[in-house]
Length: 466
Image (cartoon, rainbow, N blue to C red; front, side, top):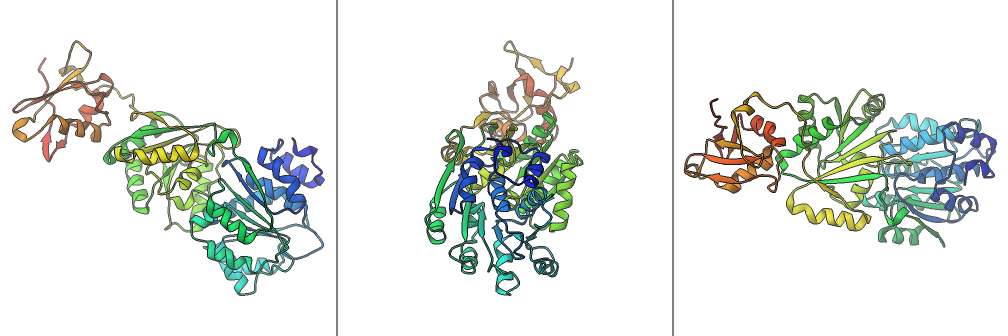
């Protein structure tokens, strides 16, 4: 169904056409009439399928322009998402002169937000903490509220906002329409809906029985912790991506990864809890404008990132919760576009990947660490090639140094990224070791073993004179 076929105001139709929203997505089709009718709804749909537009369009149409009070309150888990939804509202109400909105979030000057609220904004978008603060101070008045929306409801619960939401709900009349939207309907969502919503309509619109977009290619790479930074660099350099995001679990890790990538020529910025809101917005603009290749972020921002043509997500660390994974990769492959996500895992973390696969009903494509197409070092000509096409590398360590074959394998995996299955025969003698190296890895091996170490021993390649 197309938006132009709906009974919408000409102003909204003009806005939708201008921002190229033509055909409705399934979640939009299934919820539109029900929202117009005033039904309470719990809705779930894949990330990037237009859930925000699904509630914004019908709710804006229901606004009474003669009532100068807040009529729609939208609660979201993060400041970034509040700003993102505010931008969507701004586009939709462009030709509706009697409707305005305000985004109420922490990190912004509260006096400015209070001044805007006193102008009786008809739509208020905000995070639970700041909204509750304004309700307690009797600055935000919900006496004329028509609809309360909990967007990304599952994430708000995961982030510990349930008590705030419960208290906010006490300021809302029981007859107010209440809508809950999320990527999944888990048990905690069901329990919250029982407390807040009377006789809700449950709408699940999960495409292909998976909450991950079909247009997303998910790649998993087994790796040693020390090799992660190098692997990230190779992914970024191997192929040109429009925009990309690297997710780390901690602020400390964002600093480490960023330092390494910058030293290797990658244009990037960091986004973590230390970065002020005003600076975050500038960083997003730099990425959108093509002045950055990537941003390195924590999960704090997995919900609030809205960047056109974002086609690569790197999960540097496995997220602590599967829902975080969903919202990380949900930043790409949106609205019919394709995207790629990588996730790094250490051997013992394979069970976590299987958990993600089972929960999302998708499968990872398991690949090796990518190889950069580097020119061979001049020293390659001083290394012999055996009958099987392997380079026969001679190392200056052996049994006398307490070196075993497994130590060589570990070093190759950690420093170069070669999986054990790719390495040929290893012969450890008293003072030297012979290792068969596939030709595609020889440049990396030479580079990494110029000043390498194995078990604390200095390791170098012994070259043949020719």
